[in-house]
Length: 445
Ligand SMILES: Cc1cc2nc3c(=O)[nH]c(=O)nc-3n(C[C@H](O)[C@H](O)[C@H](O)COP(=O)(O)OP(=O)(O)OC[C@H]3O[C@@H](n4cnc5c(N)ncnc54)[C@H](O)[C@@H]3O)c2cc1C
Ligand code: SF4
Image (cartoon, rainbow, N blue to C red; front, side, top):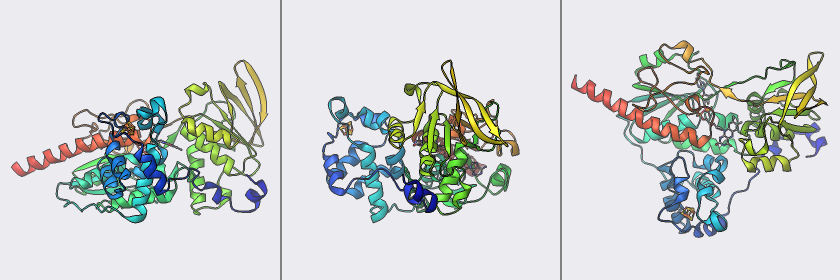
C-alpha cells in the first residue's frame, strides 16, 4: 500500500470489501453443480441446519424469491453468514463434492441470494399479529438479532436495547469493513425491523435502566445477549505503557473512522508504526490486517502455539500473509520496554531464544469475557468464576433469575456468529414456552 497516499490522503478506500461476489451467471452455474443430495451432509454441517440443498435448487432454476424465502426460515443473517462463517469447517467442509473435487461454494451463493434480495426486495414477509407477549432483548449482536427475528415472526412484540449508537454488535463495531461492509449489516437489521421489532439504541442496561425497570415496564421475558466486551490484559512488565492497546478497542475506533464518525488521529496506529499483535484468533487477524491498512510499516503476530493450533480461519491467515503480516509461532512477549512512558520495544521469546525488537504499538487480542454491568445491578443472576452467565436446560436458556434468559457469547464463551445464532434459536424456543405458559396460567387465575 502506498505510504505517501496513507500519510497525506484518506485511506478509507483501503477498507473496501476484499472478496468479490458472484454475478448472476456465475451463481446459477455454481448452483447447477449441486446434486440436491437426499441426505445432505452440507446441512448437517451447518449449526443452524440451513436448508441448503432446497434453496440452492431454487437458485439453480432462477427462482431467487423462493431461495430467500427458504433461507429466511432458518437464518436472520444470511448476508453476514455468507461472508464471515467458517464454511470450510461447516457446510462446505461436509459437501460430498468436496471429497473428490471441489465443494459447492455455499457461502458465496448465500451471499449472492441475500445481497440480491437486499437490492431487489424480492421477498416481503407478512407482518404477524403481535399478541403473544412482550419481550425485551438486551444487545443487538447475532444472538440478540436472532431472538428478535425469530420471536417477532412467532407473534411477540419485541423491543431491543443496545448501548451502541447502531445495532449489530461485533458485526458493526468489531469485524472490519473490508470483510463485512456496514451497509450489509444495516440491511439485515432493516429486515428484522420490517418484522415489527423496535430498536432503542444508546441505552445501556445496568446504567440507564436496570433489569427490574424492564420487568416493571411490563415485559414478560428478557433476553440478555450482551457478548464478551471486557478484554483480557497481559500481565508482563510494561503492560501499562502508552501504545499498548486492546484489539477490540482498536477495531472499534478503526470502524468509526472508516464510517467517517471520528478523525484518523483517534485511531491508535499511525503511518510508519512498528506493530506487534498478540494472539492468533479472528480478532488478532482483523487487528493485524487493519493495522496494515492504517499504514503501519511492519505488523507481526506473536502466538505462543503453532500454526495448526490457531483459532483464526486459514483463509484469514492466507490473506494476512498476502498483505505482509509476519508470524512468530511458539513465541511470547516477555517484557515491553518504555521510553518516557511509551512503548519503545519488546523482548520476544521464541523457544529458549530471546531477542530485543523495536516497536511502537502492542495490540492485545488474548481473549475477552463478559462485562458485569447488568449482573452487578440486578439481583439473582448467577455467573461462573469468569463472569459467564449460568443458564438452565429447561426452559432452555433461563438464568437463575425468573423470566431472564441469556444466550450467545455471554453464556457460551467467545465463539462464532453462527454458534451465537444456534444458541439463540434454542433460547427463543425456551422463551416462547415460558411466556406461553405464564400467559396460560394468567388466563386461568
Ligand atoms: C474482531 C472480531 C472478529 C470476529 N470475526 C468473526 C468471523 O469472522 N466469523 C465468526 O463467525 N465470528 C467472528 N467473531 C466472533 C463473533 O463476532 C461473536 O461470536 C458474536 O458476535 C457473538 O454474538 P453475541 O450476539 O453473543 O455478542 P456481540 O456480537 O458481542 O453483541 C453483544 C451486543 O450487546 C451490546 N451490549 C453489551 N452490554 C450491553 C448493555 N449493558 N446494554 C445494552 N447493550 C449491551 C453490545 O454493544 C453488543 O452490541 C469475531 C469477533 C471479533 C471480536
Ligand atoms: S452436500 Fe454439496 S452437493 Fe450435496 S446438497 Fe449439499 S451442497 Fe449440494
